[in-house]
Length: 369
Image (cartoon, rainbow, N blue to C red; front, side):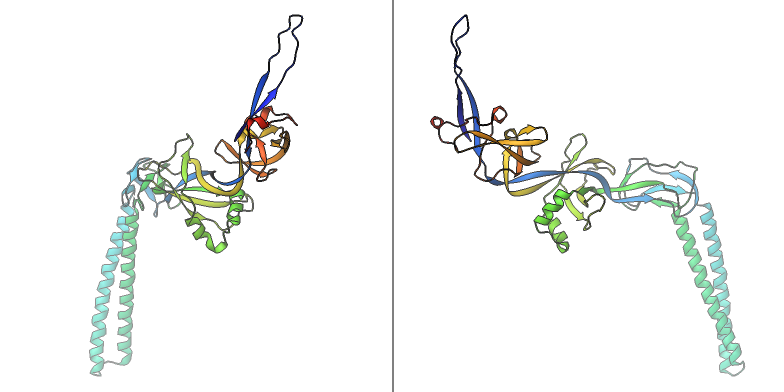
């Protein structure tokens, strides 16, 4: 930047008690516009979700006898969560086991009958008809045994369903039921959030989609593009930055017609269990903008709905030029998308005090950049 002194001379006379006017100086700084690369922090509203959020529902109907966990409790895989009245299931198992014993006895009798008739047939004492009848009875008895065994296994499974265990490690959500309630497969007992890894889900807006297209992302190269994306930061609503970085793991290949956006997920490790399903916050990802014009925000003068800068002409005077800008998100700079070109010289510090046609550079103050 170049410092130029704008000399303003105020001329007056000392007469009738008036003060003698003095010479005052006003300063401006200028810069030469050039293109450069800048990293922009893109921000997206996001909501956390467990990698394995499981809705816990019963597989059998019955009375809820025990709630073995509390809301917000960290549980391990296989840990007991709920117990349903198992008396009916036990009776069904006992009945199925009794039926199996009867079927086995019937099978044994049918087998003896078949073997006896087979022996007699070989001695030509009984007919083929009697042998075939004995064979069919034996096969029917075998089928009855298989069916009885299946009933026992089904009864054992139903008995096992009376004790509901955690299918993944995680955090217990809200428990809307109470001991004594009648529950069924339609009853939601709780949501178990598998929280060893958490997903932040968010929508990618049109600006980022356009950047992807400009960078040459093709339909078949989504995974490759995702792998090259920078790490993401999760900022909670209170402004706290989560200490572990995340990586983009998915990006839908279809733009939502209603919102004009893509849905994305960022995976975050959660070793200390500080992230919970439902937490809302902001995903921050740095994206590089290459070969763009970047100027300080204080060089831009706002006039209603327009933005302008003061461009320094060859005669060292300033003229207003309308520009369009994009916020960089760093609180200091703007990207100029139209109105300026490389090599232009503009006023930076003091831009708010410049008037059209005012001289801002003086040869005796040195050459400007």
